[in-house]
Image (cartoon, rainbow, N blue to C red; front, side, top):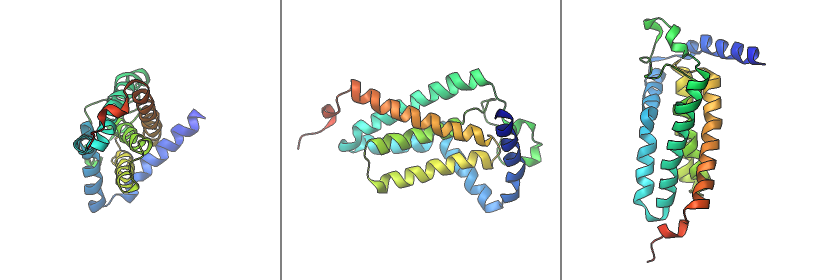
Length: 186
């Protein structure tokens, strides 16, 4: 099974340049940079913290990003030690400079993105808020494969890690922090 997954990863990695186009390249680089250090998700978090009704959700988002980073970047990447695929590319084949971290499994950009997605879904945010967050998360995840800094399985596992950490964050917050202390009586 692992051999099949590795073969699939290699085939996708080798064939992804077929869809590269200058305009798409710019979009994917921008999407990937939005995920650097969770920039886009901190912006979403600030928006949630500003609105009293969603302040609790904003705090859960902060916790979920931290938990996801701890699990993915702090533990799993250093346990698995899978080298990024871009380290084997010639400079002219790279659309993005090599990332700071040497290891690729799982995708931290994707994991933190889907942790935020799960928190807003479980917090019953309106669909007009969830849809752009989900679209952004999917674009960031795809950009990591498109830019050849991750294998497809890095991103898929990142999705599952993010969903799990987002769910755990909501459950922990609901068990420990009473939600009603954040509501402002008008």
